Each structure stands twice: as structure tokens, then as C-alpha cells.
Length: 593
Image: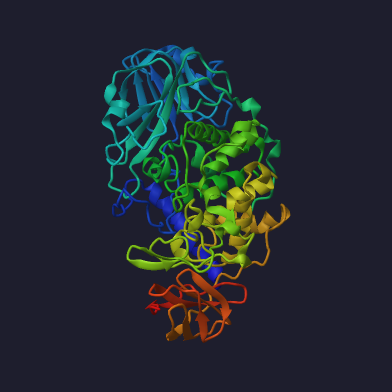
């Protein structure tokens, strides 16, 4: 059995095991807590975070008003009961019970009875009520009214690093709301390295009832008018491709996106506020999720089969777009910031909204991918730098030695750990998040935009070309893919949509051998002669910032300053320009005149 087959079996088994763990909610063994003040190390690749598909999706309304025993969809202003995107809803009556609205394990208890025209569901299933209303009780222990883009949260004391008690509106009951979005959450009952919340839902209080088919207004911000309606969706761009092996079920796809994604905390700290039952925690797994949904929506399914997932996915895009408008961003930070641009731009395509299609924010996939230009090519001789007690060479030093881009790499689609232009390098190595946590999960969103022929709308070609390069280099190896469905779709359909980037794939990224046996043969006040041994076909020598290219041993370096101390050394070099990872060097003081 080949390595590729073994890896497919491993990841498939891991995915099934994870579903089982999540279905046995509460029995999951917690990880050891990490330091909340620094980004996480790469996750175990065999444990992708996924929403719990077994948790309840039921929404209900309880009231002693007999009129409200009808479904809220009976109101002209609420979502039609035919909408497959609405959560399963039921209504019960109890003459001794105050009105209660329940959505995904969160219950809001109100101080007054609601007539049928005073409450209902948006097209995605989330509830609205006509204000003013007073919330007198909550089943969850955290809540924020119209949350803003900030790392400070009022959701859970379990994440004390950013929790602010004054922001927790669950502690301010009774809470009267004229208009606004009350995002309510429940703390995860177990100690866990990353998971701090288990459930989250949003109740929107509006001035006037929305129209049938309206999307929920974004939960961030204060404007609670509905600007988008299901009738605006342009589904003609969605394709009808034949399914492949490992295609998720309709239920699985719907469960990935049917709940609100609480994602208004910028940067890597957002991970701790992603409710376990609502959304994946880590950006790599968010990218896998949105990629799977996007590809599934382009399969040969009926419009009715696609309806709920489509509406839920667009709703997520609407929410994230508003967060971006309010200053939100999702920088790469290893693998944290992936998967957010896709639903925003997709929603823009579906709703023909220029703002969403041209959203301005930092997104992990775009930040980590680029084409090598002269700006990335380090000039020779390289600078000697020090970080964390380690010596490294060139323009960037982060506690490890790194190879450099050379003229040979010009135009190559490349990857970097963070947005710092100097953090990239040609070496294809595991420890920098290149393999574990980025392009391994990008197959779905990249291919999905190819299939819809909307690559130009994404407007970052380096991502698409780098994904082609990643698949060519990493295919059949560990971290080949994070979604078996997306990988199978890629193998089946990628070649049908646009040119596959293939220039000199794979690029040579293996450094030249490091020279050995460096000796100072002689020196004067202004020159030094050195000798060395080495297997590389070419060698470059240096003394401080003075360099001589393409020499053989022994060789002389001139133009030095009398009495000055220099690092003197030699790099191995291939014919294509790739130098050794490190030089061999000595520190030498020049003679006085």
C-alpha cells in the first residue's frame, strides 16, 4: 500500500473518530492548557475541529398566548415555513409560562407575551422580535448586545485573558432592548486548551418586522434593518457537477454552517471564542469547512437540496463582511486566519454586492501567498543576525537558520508564515506551518472559485497558483490534504477549469552543500586569502559586507580596512544560484599598516 493510500485511511479514520467524539459530547479528553499569550503550535493533523453534528438544531417558542401556538412562519413578515434553511421549529403553549424563545440550546425569557406578528424567524432560521422587549432570564451565562470588534469579551470567565465582566450583558438582567442583536453563549463545562464556549445564538430585536425571506442583519453594529433577501440570490453561477467519493451528506454540510459564527475578536485570540457546536475553532479547519460547503453547493443537487446550506453560508458571509467593515481582520498567524474571505466574497457573488466582492481586510490565505520578486531576493553578502541565542544569516532571523530566494525563484508562487515580507523562504519544511496548517486545507475554496469561474473576483492570483504548486509538490505525502472530499474533487475537476500553474514544478528548493575545512592562508592590512573544501560546484566568499562571487579555493578578498575585525567565510552554491543553508566562517582581525 502506498503512502498516499495510508494517509487517506488515517485521515478518514480520524475524521470519523472525531465525529464520534463530538457526538459523545462531554466525554472528550481535554488537552493540556497552553499559554494564552502566544499563538498555538500546529495542531495534531489527525484531529480536525468540526462542528458537532449531533447537537440539537431545534428552535422553539413558548407562550401562554394561544395565538402563538401557530408557527411563527404564519406571520407574513417571518420566514416561510417552506424555507428549508429554517431550523426545525415548534411552538407550545403553557398558561403558566412566560414567553420563551429557544434557539440552538439558548433560551431567552421575555417579560411580555408576544403576538404572532411580533416575532418570527429570518430566512436562515434565527429569531427576531419587535422591540422594545425586556429579557428577564437567559439559559446561557454570557451575552453581548451589539458586540464590537475587540479582543475583550463578555461571554465567558473561562477565558479570563480577555473576559470583561462589564461587557457581559447576561449579568445586567432585566435587560431592555429597543433594537439590537443579543448574542448569547454558554460556557464549555470542561477544562480545554482551546474550547471555552459550547453554544451560541443570536436574538435580533427590530423596530418593525422584516419581510418574508429577509436575511438576519449582522450581529455586530447597531443597524438592524434587513438589507438582503433570499430573492436576491443569483444561483446561476452554481454548477451541477457529479459527486465524488467521500462527498458529505446534505445534513453534514448544513450542520457546518447553520449556526451563527461568533468571530468578531480579531487575530488568533478569536479561536477561544468559537463555540464548539457552532463552528470550527482553528482557521485551518474553518478553511476546510467553507471549502467543503462551497464545493458541495456546486454539485448536481436540486435547488431545494442546496437551499438551507446556501442561505446559511451567505448569512455567515454577511456577518463577516460587517465585521470587516468595523475593523475586523483575520491575519494568518500560522494557521489561524484562514477561511473567512471565502464566505464573504461568495456572499457578494450571490447577492451581486460590490462591497463584499471587494472586501478590504487582512485574510490569512492572501497574506501568506505571494510571487517572488526582486524585493524578496536577499543581496549578497548576507547579514549575520542573532535571535534567541542563535546565529542566522540574511534579512530575517527568528531563532532558526533559513535559506534565501535567489534570481532562480523570480515569479514563483510562494508561501510565508506571517505577513512579514521577510518571513518566507524556499525550503519546503514542516516546522513553519507551511504543511500542517495552511494550503493543506485550501483545496476546496480555491477549486470552488475555479469552478464558478470567479477567480478574478477573489483577486489574488498567487493563492491559486501556489495551491497548484502545493498539490504538485505535496501530493501523495503527509499533509497532502485536510478534506478527502475536497482532494477528490480537486483530482477529478481541477484540470477542467483554467490553466494549472506548472512552471518548473517542483522548483529546486534544496540548498547547496555547506563547505568545510575553512582556513586563513594569509592576510595583510587590506586583504585576506582563505582556503576550504566543499562539494558544491560554485562558492561565494565574504568578509563582512565585502563579497566575491563564483570562486574556487584558495581565493582572496581585498578592499578591507586595516585593524578591522571581520566575519570571513564561504558559502556553497549551486549553478542555479541556491546557496548553502549556512556558511563556514571565522572571525579575523586585519593587520595594522
